[in-house]
Image: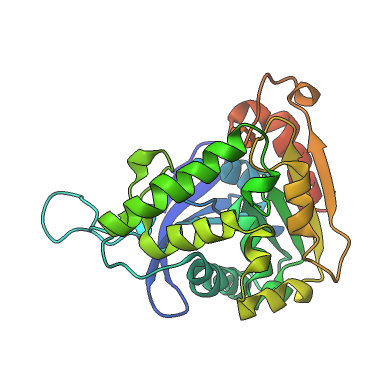
Length: 298
């Protein structure tokens, strides 16, 4: 285990998904007493390293924090048999967004719950990471859930003209390209490469009026099982996770009354926040502190 600055220990780990697939993660631990456990769940096509600063901040405040990569993403992508440190091709790799929830996120929740069974377990979700809370059967193990820019991402609830660009890209560029190549290449502007099944399910949801709620996934029944507290942040300059889209997602949690908060960049002295800006270190004493205090019940 390596000692990091800011009174935080950082350890690179591996743990099995529910089907045994090896997932890679990073554990952030405080040097002092652990008071809370927090699982950070990534956005689509986003590697866990994006959340390193925020995870370290939470650990500094006394939280045991786990970040990890879904299968096919970042360090949870299989290495190539030849070449130095090259990832294996995603052609033929079997995975979907619902697999990420049922196999990977479910296992991460269980791993944290078992390892830190005396601590309250909080769930942090960015974009898809928040959506998945409603799909996992063990969301009853979560005491508090914090969403950042997490929404029912139907193109219809995005801002103009972005929503038309997203619709056109998904249907007229992304889907044909995925069928042709066998995977979604990151160079088209989506972030990391994505497995074929992940992108096609994502495109189907984005094209549906109510996003994943229009699918016939049996796992949708798990939305109603969550009975913890839920706070969802949306940002006024985020073209994708608009307040109506965030409210549509949180409306699925029918057993509770989620709290949805809209933040303007000017509220925290910033020029822009958007879909990813929350994770910039400049927000350490504003957005980070506010959400950390809520996660820890302070």
